[in-house]
Amino acid sequence: MKKIIYTDKAPAPIGPYNQAVLVGNTLYTSGQIALDPISMELVLDNIETETKQVMENMKAVLEAAGMTFEDVIKTSIFIMDMNDFARINSVYGSYFDEKTAPARETVQVACLPKNVNVEISMIAIK
Image (cartoon, rainbow, N blue to C red; front, side, top):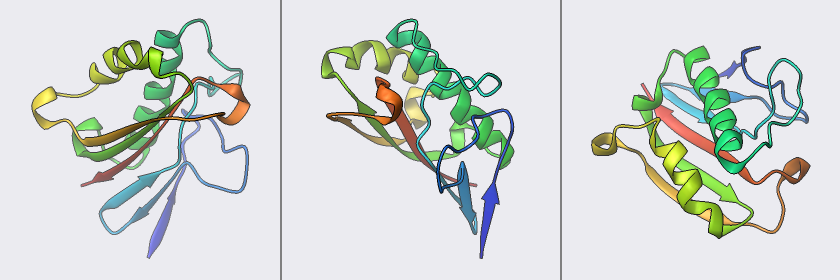
């Protein structure tokens, strides 16, 4: 049975999807972009602040499901420009213990929602 996860500490969905779905002890998150959850305005000052907002949004979704970044087993990172990889990776990496970091793929894409530079989704198990 699936349980819908929602928190007002992360951006409200802007389409026909939910922030996350919990099935048993596995959490599947939707991709997060750098929307401020209060103003619903994009945070695009630079790639580091954009990535930090994405990760803070993801943190709020994980917490709403009773989880943390330590429970994450897989992430998918979609970026507009692979030249930003090192800067995105630096911020992303600060949220994980390198020894227990999840599996991951990073893919450069042609376009992301609202023309952002980075989107991240995760799978976590408790």
